Each structure stands twice: as C-alpha cells, then as structure tokens.
Length: 388
Image (cartoon, rainbow, N blue to C red; front, side, top):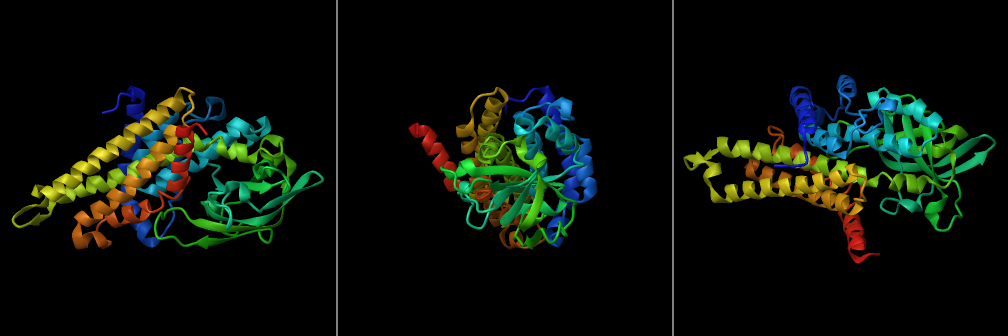
C-alpha cells in the first residue's frame, strides 16, 4: 500500500520477515514464559544480517541506509517479539549518537563493533526522580585529574547486563542554569554479565510483566572512575543535546515496534476468527468481529503510513520531530488498543498461555510509556502546532 518503499526496501523487508518467521516466532513464547533472554546466537545472526548497523556510515562498518530501512526491519522483528525489535534499537540510537557527536577516536573504537553486534550498548538516563523530566538527574560526575568520578543511580536501564558499553548521563556542573546545560554523557566500558563491576558499579534486576527477552536494571555508581577520553565528544555540558538529537529516529523506530506488535495481534485475531466456530459458523461471520477486524487493519495501516512519512522526512534530512511524535503517539496507542481487542476476540482462551495474544497485550503496555509517554508526545505535538 505504500509508495515509499522501493525494491531495495522491499528486499530488506523480506529478509527481516524470513528471519523473524524462521528464528524468532518459534522461540518467542518460550522466552516469554521462562522470562529468559534473547539467545546469543540470535544476536549473532542479527549482526551478520546487518540489523544493528543499518544507518551507520559504511566507513564504520554500517550499511549506510536510512530511517525507512529501519522502519521496515523494526516492524518485522517486533512482529515476532517486541524485545527483538528493541534490541536492534540499542545500538542504532547510541551508535548514531556516537557518529554524530563522538570524537574520531570514540567512533573508531566503538561503532564498527556496534555495527556487527560484537559490542552491545545500553542507555542509562532515567533516574528515580527524573523520568520525563530528563534534565532533573542527580548522578554526579566530578573531574579529578584525567578521569571522572561518578556517583548516583539509574533505573529502567534495559539490557545493562549484556552491554559492553553503557551510555550514562551525569551532571558535570550541578549548578548550571538552566539545568540541562550541566549534563554530560559518559561511555562506561564493562564486561557483559550481571556482576557489573562491583563495588563501584552494581545492579539489581527489575521484574516486569512483559517485554521479556531483555532484562531491565537499577544501576548504582559509587566512586566509579571513567577516563576522560570516554566523555562523549570530549566536551562537558553537551549530554542533554546529544540525547535529544536522537529522539526523532528513536521515536520513528519506537513507532514501528508498536506497529509490529499490533500487526502480530491483528494477524492472530484474523486467523482465530476463521478457525473458531460458534453457533455453527466461524466467528468471522459475526458483524461485531468483522467490524473489529476492519478497525484494526485500518488503524494499523494509518499508523504505518504516518510512520513512513516521518521516516521519509528524516531520510531527506528534514525536521520531523512533529511527525515522529505523532507516529509514536498513534502507533503505541493503537497497539495497546488492538492487542486487547485481539485478546477479547479469543474469549477465555485469550487469557491463557495457550495463545500468544496475552503476550502481545502485556508487551504493548510498555509502548505508551517508553521513549516519551503519551502525555509527553501530546505536549511536543501541541508546542509545534502552537509555534512555541
């Protein structure tokens, strides 16, 4: 239905779809039920297919593609399992931040490995008192000689245990006015594993109701030493701008994670409506079911086309924070709505582990919250509309 996708994008889409159907869908329910993590061999295959470095420049081992390529791959991966679509985003967002703002030494040290997946990353920005209010962080980085000493804590740091590099945001100037001007980003190198680097870096896993496949942590920094060459870009006070600079592509990618989950639920509901017989006929013959399916298909396609529009603007180098925010808002809301609708269409069976619709619904609960809440997206959109 889209005029945005050329043959190159369609081929990439087919590759991601084949990978998802052969490698992800067969193991997704087991990962979810056991609250396990995405297997290492899956990450390795994703790296071999180039899913981690889609938008990285070729000189750093990437494919040199664009946001539309990210969109088609993300939807397919997330259709199989939300966390698989999300794991590709870890390196995409942090890698582009490095490409855009990092020193040449930092780019050469990290980006090629991030493109292959040999280096995995996690972002540590959110704190107990700083969620949507990103500038209100309390973690402190004090310069001592040729290193920084970090103290503080972070919450909801997803994939922290398997990351080789943590992108940690901390205050280098606690007295800066406005507050965001005192924030810097540090690249914390670590060995993968839940041991982190005690006693200076420790972590506790946060149990979640869904989004299994990647674990989420609270992190604690206690006099953690970071070499000055690991200050992103080599200049203090740029962390907030570096973080915000990636929000357009992050929200486009997040929109297509939502679309993938919504599509998975819709496809299951469509299949079930043909198979489930009540009153001597498939429930697909009942008007209530037919209307729900029609609404699902229409709203998912509307979100997809809005997402493509935002991605195409990004591809052309145009400002797209408005469109990216709209796409993220719409896609995340319809994902939550239609995963619940798919569960209802399954009746009592939808609330059992026998069918995956309950997984889609639990995963979708995160979508209106992550990468900027529904309320934050509406505020961003309103500011643009009002010219503020």
